[in-house]
Amino acid sequence: MDELDFSEQIAALRSTFADIRSVVGVERLTAEIASLSEQAGVPDLWDDTEKAQKITSDLSHRQAELAKITSIQSRLDDLEIMVELANEESDAAAAADARTELESIQKLLGELEVQTLLNGEFDSRAAVVTIRAGAGGVDASDFSEMLMRMYLRWAEQHNYSATVLDTSYAEEAGIKSTTIEIDAPYAFGTLSVEAGTHRLVRMSPFNSAGKRQTSFAAVEVIPLIETTDVIDVPESDIRVDVFRSSGPGGQSVNTTDSAVRITHIPTGTVVSMQNEKSQIQNRAAAMRVLQSRLLLIEREREAAQKKELAGVITASWGDQMRSYVLAPYQMVKDLRTDYEVNNPTAVFDGDLDGFINAGIRWRKRDKD
Image 1 (spheres, helix red, strand yellow):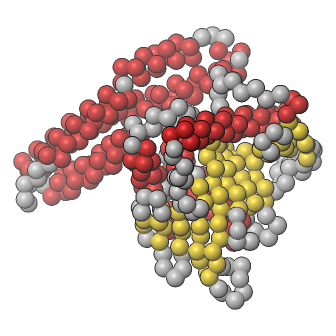
Image 2 (spheres, helix red, strand yellow):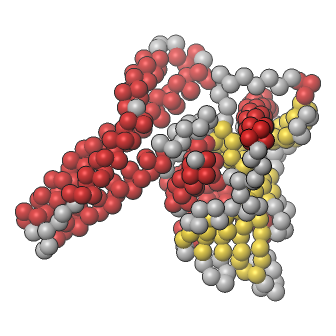
Image 3 (cartoon, one colour):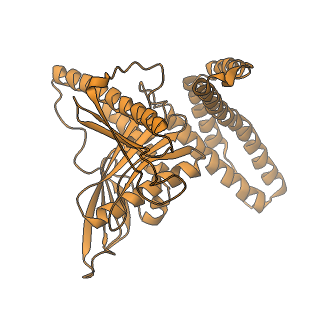
């Protein structure tokens, strides 16, 4: 067996790791965990359920982030030992294990390095993802449901909490729209690069002539606001409608007017919510999403004004940001980054990290 020499790769990984530790701020992270742990240990913590959930969620996120950082240090040390043992014993199996571990650490550090680029005002927040069917008829509705499943599978693969807040089902197949909340560290910053128009090209299963069909779906990603955010929405600015939930049945579904639709009259923004059984809970959830959208609208307005003053009037990208082609060939390609894969099935099963990481790096370069 040829002697393994990963010295250069390991040295490069240690250098990258040191930069990541510096940007993440391990000391600050440790202090935040200590503070949150103290708050979580207060006897009357759960007297205020919303505050308690916020504290425990923040604590869990930061503990997971720190655990990921600290594990890399020991894995790098262990990798050097694995290489030494493989060389001493000329063990091909041990050498293969070392190569696998090297690739695993490289991938993990690459993901963490991308996370250090997420330094926007709301990047660390949870995300609210809304998918809407566009042009393409039944195929567009079916495509929208495929995208909903894709993002739910992505969240599942990362052990992120994902809740479907509202879904409007199409008459023949698929969905007209859906809203999903994904609660994870840096969920908004990570998923914000998924916002835009997605295009599907395939042989339509709904077309008896078997012709190729192109359909579109729009993906919107907004940060979930927190109770500390100040968004004043006067009652006079909203219209609240209640209706019965639609879609698959279940206990309390379609039996009471528990679903809520809130329209923000000045902007025309509409939010529907039917995930909860209680009208009060649905209204509270809908208001939170509405406030999140209004917050983003305000930030975009401010950014547009700054660009106009600077004389920058070009759009960031075109009408479609990603194409999913199932026929006559197999490919998924991001039209902003040129990142592509030839396995659409894996992508629709939630294998999105390559696209997301490329998108985050592209956005950073575009801003610089």
